[in-house]
Image (cartoon, rainbow, N blue to C red; front, side, top):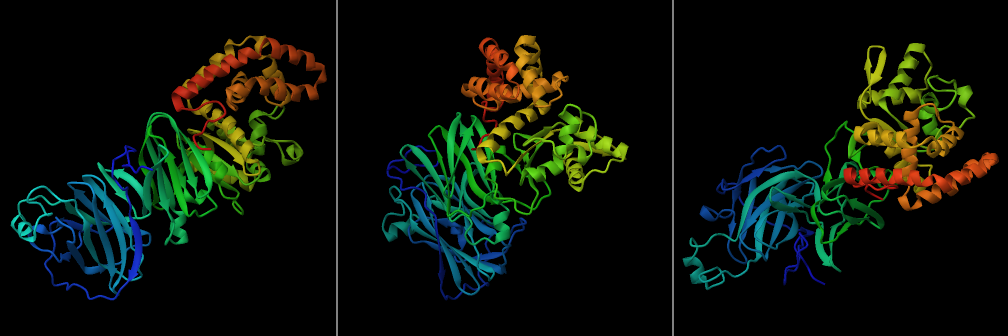
Amino acid sequence: MRRATLDNRPVPGFCGFFFVLGCLFLCMSFLSCGGKEVYAFGWFDERGSRLAFSGSVTGSDVGHFFRDGETARYTLVTPANLQEGYAVRLSFSASSGGIEFQVRCGDEKGRASVALCSIPSQGRFSFVVPFSAQNALRWIEVKVLKIPRQSSGGRGGTAAQTVADQGALEPTLSIQEIRFVSAMRGMRRENEGLEVSPHFSFEMKDGRGHYEIRSPFEGLSQGVKESMQLDVVLDGQADIATLFWGDRKLTYRHPGQRSALVFPSSLFASVPDRITLEVSDALRVERFCLVQTAPSTELASIDPGLLVYHTPLGDKPYYLARWDLRPEVLLFLFKDYATQDRYLKRLAFFVEKIGFVGRLAQDSEIADLHGWNAHDYRPEDLARFFDAAEVQKFPLSAEERDLEQTLIKAGVIVQSGARISAGKGAIVSIAQESPAYLQYRFLAHELSHALFFTDSRYRDLVLSLYQKLTDDERWFIIRYFRWMHYNVDSSYLMANEMQAYLVQQPLKDLETYFSNTLGERLAADHPELEDAIHEYMQRHLSALVATAQQLSSYLQASYGFEPGRLYRVR
């Protein structure tokens, strides 16, 4: 097994990053606050204010380290109480690799947490050390464990040579600053340097880079845990990355170049003992870290595939987020079909159902009729629905009023006085009651509608392809959607539904899905059409396959998507 640097290039003899945190409870006397104040580098609080502190080393060597065994302690004039979830970040510059040192953070009671740090190569490195003691932080101590021997006259010589050469050499390790920062666990490249926490480790296994965050939520309160999110940023050619949230496996389709992904910890029911990322040499990992998000009224922007992993909603009617690649699209995850119906069923009949289009149906009219198991709507139709309700003084349900206010707040519809007009974006919804495989299928279908609503180039392509089909080639589409109670008089709706059915499954499954699943479903209810359906599949299904291939090419080129998977995580 070979170890490697964090850009996945093997380095002979390098033992890998390690940064192990332990806690020692020791009684010790403190350095007097009367020591000389340090100005060679700064110590800053979480607001960026400079803190006064003294050092055990004075003169030109403050903050610099030359040889094994050197120790320096830095003591705050006024002990600092760190906010919950905050940590201490120490930034260093190194003129060579192979440096190992120890960082100790002590409180007023003499208790100290200890971190062992390793620097593999020259450059700038920062180490984020948690400090969870109940008492205020008083001091930080850095002790060098190993510095490679330097050339002639270097620190590897005799004691006499060491003293004689004191001013002749550049320091091998230097502190750049100390700063209090919000919780970060893992690694990230920042400002041409590398930042790591005690929980992070990396190694090469079987030609793949393994990045791991151990005990990722250890020592954090429940409130802080729920506010954490995993940031993943990759750079390189298109490839598959594998993420393990504990034992749960997720695959991520990196579309190429630079891509970013966010995993809110609140989505997952389990608190894992570790989080692991596995990538090939084709990918460079820029970020793999848990960070604390600031309190915000803004919705999270996530990959839609993560909705399937959401913990059971329980008493909450739905979870709401934005689509990370198209933030104007709202993603609703309802806890069950009944709840989804209370929010969206009347809207579905108003927008799409034959005999109900443009009309606000009473509950008694549609109570025994099926709505949809998943939904999608554009701002224009949402605005018409709520504006009609306002004009007609129609008694919408509490859930529908909640939806209206949510859409206004998100900018999908706009309220001006008593009138409602279209804003920007779209909404899609699925329900947790659907089994996972159906949630993925519904997502692919509904997300394609969202693209049709929000991506004008995709919409123009779909409408053009639909118009190019002959009446014979469109026959099955119109006949099937009439059976589904869609408003088949709208060519806009028919084109939109056609593209969704064409890209909701992989291309290789398209012919079987249309000829067997859809064809047999229609023939079972209309046996008089069985021969016509069979003839259509023999003569005209190829036209739909060709249409799907053109849609696939656009999705791949524009988003890195492929039919059946209009999301990046599964």
